[in-house]
Image 1 (tube, helix red, strand yellow):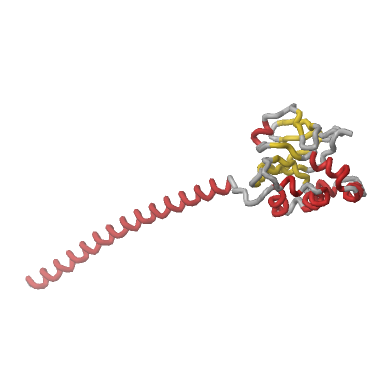
Image 2: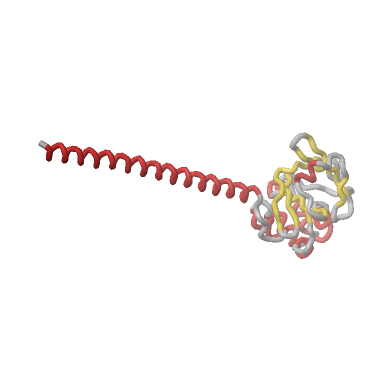
Length: 199
């Protein structure tokens, strides 16, 4: 009888100790899970911060070519002999017409410009470039200002709410559709039209 009680007692103690051991293990697992979650959250936050500010990997021309939306622009720059200029130290800010913007020109106008690349085409392209790094935040504070271009004449900036429009020499309002595309020698802002300098 005494042996049975002793064995039962030993089994009970073992079960009790086992239960305690399980509780400790769960506590350690919980702590590990919390640490893992904290690490994952920190990693995600760091990734988000890095995504918000992409690093420049090429100059203005290389960045425009890599973007995929400025094929016509880069071809026009090559034809007009302006690639070397925009590969220079700068810095430059380019308000870059997208492929759709060039496609929206009146029929035959682009072909006509490309036929005389160092004439009107070069003037038009330089009208889209200004000196210095002018980021979107800066442009938002330029409502009503006239901006000097590399071509020598000016366009006007209009800001309405979150929308930025550029008024060219012909009075056309061209909208900025994408901002702050970084380049090693400046920045690109995409626009939905081709600006024309004053006649």
